[in-house]
Length: 270
Image (cartoon, rainbow, N blue to C red; front, side, top):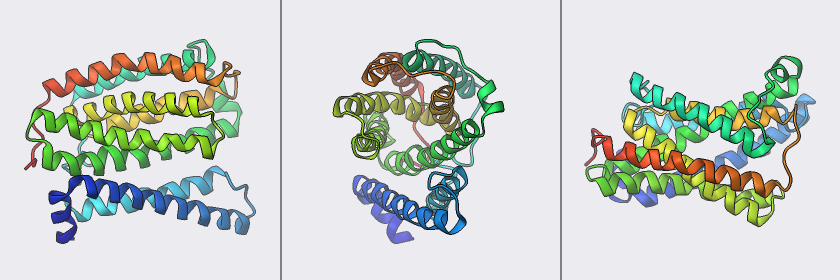
């Protein structure tokens, strides 16, 4: 493990690229195993229990690596963060949840009864909970920590760390074209919006020293849109929703820049 840690210190970009690829490979392997398990258990392939188990395996693997590297505290996994960062995150969550609902459904109203009436809505919420947790532990936990430990002693280095972590996460959304049949224009705008909003999440993690506000924002931002889909029709064409959300995300990106300007150098940066 000392060899891995030394490699991360000397070649942080190569390390985070390798970690992201390994995470993707493990995720694909888990999907394949989930298909086998769903057949064996007689459950649908996209069953929430099967999906949750897969995400748990991937998340556990990432956490074990962070633990073995001795980065649990530095990555923000074992830190809750102070009241100020949670207050900022709560305000951002309310703003982005309302913006997301308006962007996709034309109204900020949210039908809470879907969670009570529909098992599928609860399953969707659980799926997005696990997805947000898994992705934040990798990108705002492991990846951002690896970069900031090397580059975090200067302001450009801090910004570069958050930008690269956000870019890696955003680029993955181009796969929407192949995985879900999204149009290339929709996938491109989604990738841009994801970059802006994940920059905001990364800045919040750096500012507060904890990944948990970002986990909350990630989960809630995705879950409210998914759950509302059981009660309302999404606007057409879909690319319009992504365009709206991109514009709504820009103020949070600007706020992220402000947080990085105010934040102190991350302890442990070389």
